[in-house]
Length: 66
Image 1 (cartoon, helix red, strand yellow):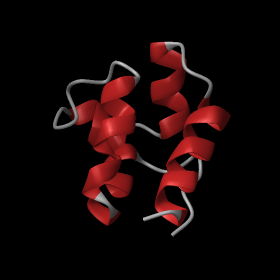
Image 2 (tube, helix red, strand yellow; image 1 turned 180 degrees about the vertical axis):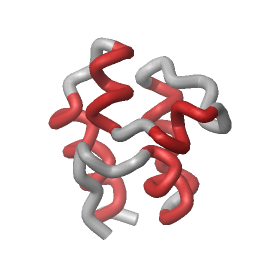
Image 3 (cartoon, one colour; image 1 turned 135 degrees about the vertical axis):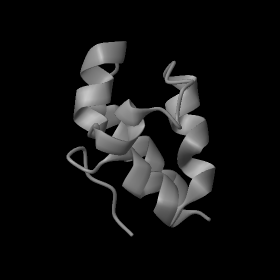
Image 4 (cartoon, one colour; image 1 turned 30 degrees about the vertical axis):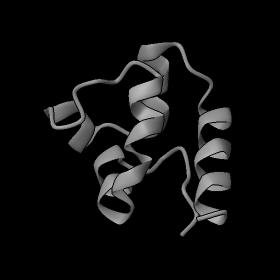
C-alpha cells in the first residue's frame, strides 16, 4: 500500500490502523470524528500546520518496514 496526501484519513486507518500514531502525533486526536472520515491527509495537515509531504513520507517508510 502506498499512501498519498489526497487519501482520506479514515481510509488509511482502515487499511492499517497502526498509522493512527502519525495522526495523533500531528495533533489530530479525534480520529473518530467526521473530519477524519471526510478529510484528506493534505487538508488535515493544512489545519494542523504539518507538511503533508513529510507526513506521507513518514507513513510510507513505516509501512515499508512493517
